[in-house]
Image (cartoon, rainbow, N blue to C red; front, side):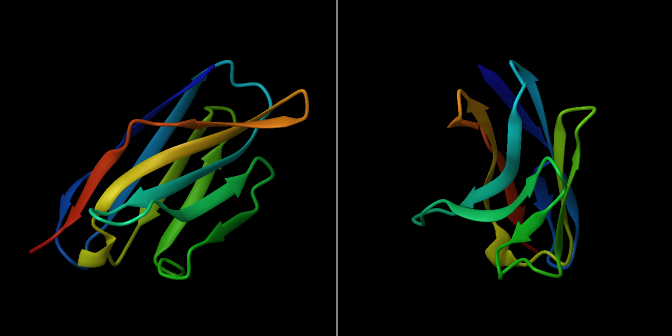
Length: 119
């Protein structure tokens, strides 16, 4: 089992910045993908950004140029630097880790952290 603990959410004004962190613990071997998803009220959960253990990243079009995902493999932690935040970025942000066990992928999710962008 992998446990994911997110931190760093909160209330920020439009144009502001926040940094989310997600620390993985437990049976963390063979984690290859880590990423951030978000879910706004009344909407489906969507990918924000993801990063492989080799450092390759991809982003949702809506956050390209504003958000940066990074990963510290030694600390088993993934970060999401969010800049130029907009009200439409308001959502619960979830961390996800994908672990390979006997060549099968297993998904683990954090509990979520609220990000609210409002003046």
